[in-house]
Amino acid sequence: MDPAGPWFYNDPESSRLDKSDADFVQIIHTNGGGMLAGCVGLKDKIGHVDFFPNGGKHQPGCTIGGSWMDLLTGGCSHGKSHKYWIESINGTPAFVSQPCSDWTTYTKGVCNACGQGCLNMGFHVDRSLEGTYYLTTNKHQPFALGAVPSPRYQPHYRA
Image 1: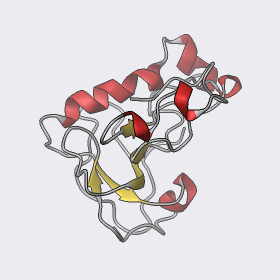
Image 2: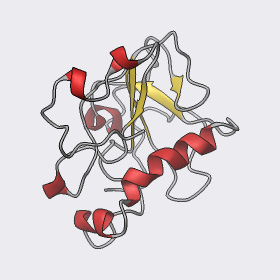
Image 3: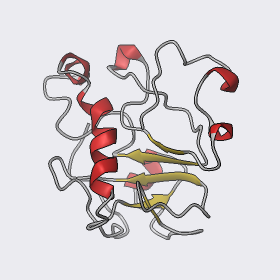
Image 4: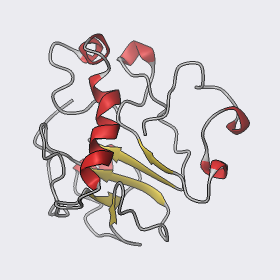
């Protein structure tokens, strides 16, 4: 869940988390990027499946007052990865995600078809699918939205 970035940004796979560490590695990126952007997680695609909720950089409600507030308030975005995982256990509503190349393409609605298949992030992940997946969440619990967004979906928040 949101693997640590500082001190690991440039390390080889043998020194940090990657998909060779287990039969199936699911990554939930919630605060990926550099420290100067107020982020502490790895943004690289390193798992069998990499989820990028809300773009994977800053989560809704964590940047009030600027991106550095995310870190100053105790790593709000970084900490949401485990909250999403815990909520996913009950599975209702699900954290439905779509395969897509990047956040910008996702928010433009270009990835509206599930292609190889939409995927539930978290506990109920389908281990037969691999790739990069994007989804949006609510600002507060319940975080999961359940349904796949319609084409030209625009997230209800901006980081």
